Length: 107
Image (tube, rainbow, N blue to C red; front, side, top):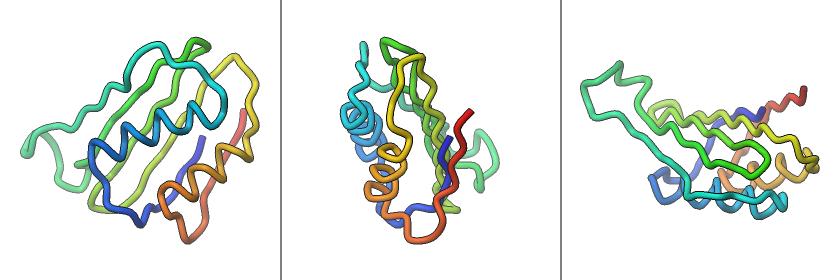
């Protein structure tokens, strides 16, 4: 799991490119395009607006949650296939332009 504050301009295309790019960077195989959701205005609290996204992997999946007003994101990378955790951290930090702490946990 990775969490942090992003400094880049967020959009549906940025979310899609991150999920596909992270999977590729970690040599994880996807079997479908990312699914990206952004509830219409008024469906929830404004402070929770953003994106919910998922890309299925042959060996499980990657979920990304983005809070647009807070410039905050959370990633859950679940896979039965091994991967280098530090590589996921470095890719995510660079992609989202994280300047402060990037919190991560493996379990």
